[in-house]
Image (cartoon, rainbow, N blue to C red; front, side):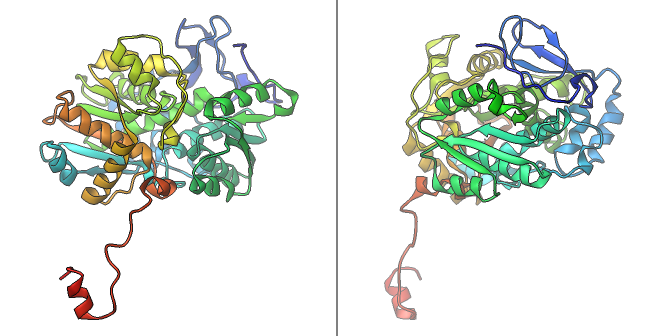
Length: 429
């Protein structure tokens, strides 16, 4: 793959992205200046943000975070954003609920007080994608882009449309043509351009990579392509929030859904940064990845003991996770093995059961990705892989109203006449 860049009128050496110091290759360590680049010019490995945190005092940093706004910008000192980010037009996502899920714990055989659900359906467009787009938007501003774009399985398209509308930018996003109707409507409602591509997500992503290198894509910031190093950092804030909400403690176990795998790798990066900064005690934690069986390339590789992830053609109701060739798959394998975790998958039927279970026990209506994480958590406990006596956090990354088709058939308990006799006849008394 050739290195893709977009030329803008902005001098990238002069951009203000806070503590971000450079882009560093995850494979060879080669560093380049901050800019709209996502692949290493030396080995074509993925680039990520490298920081300079050397000036921070632990206690002063903790106080600064705790005094910050109730959104992800409380962590601005640890993110690639300018110091005045909270003053700019932005959707300001984050600081979502960490729900102590004792009723769900009882169903799964977890000790009371040990199971938590990080419910990111409370974000502005009802998915965790608002976090990553907020980061990408700041990079887009810094590099002078005029159009915000993405390849998406649905949630990201809506998050980009909403963020661009709020920021006063044009948006044009690309999705597989057969997405859930709820996600199509939510992506289109913000007034940007929504383009369906004939094919699956991997086809959409390939097209966007080609568009970046074409003159037609000049001035476009693709949040998950040429802005990917900045975009991906938004997922770290999940780790930051979880630890702060647990009283500045690491969870013992965390279950994360896998699409591209970026969220899981950045959650791990966030935990490692908190340890290095002294904000949490350094102790072991385990990270588990969750996939749907109909698109489980990482789970398949993990179980086979492979280091390489073989692409699959997606066929699952969990369309937000339906990425058959996950870019961060090998890194997910490394993290799962390094932390003593695992990568597991569940059937579509188990996904639906888990969605209903979470709704019935905790009042949280998850989309299919949340059903995947809850279903995998249940399976890991039943198989003796996940320890039910340890503090465990399960991620719900989106709102079930976006994937209503998955639970079609759920409806009225009974239809009665407006009389007490009819009520009693229905056996409801």
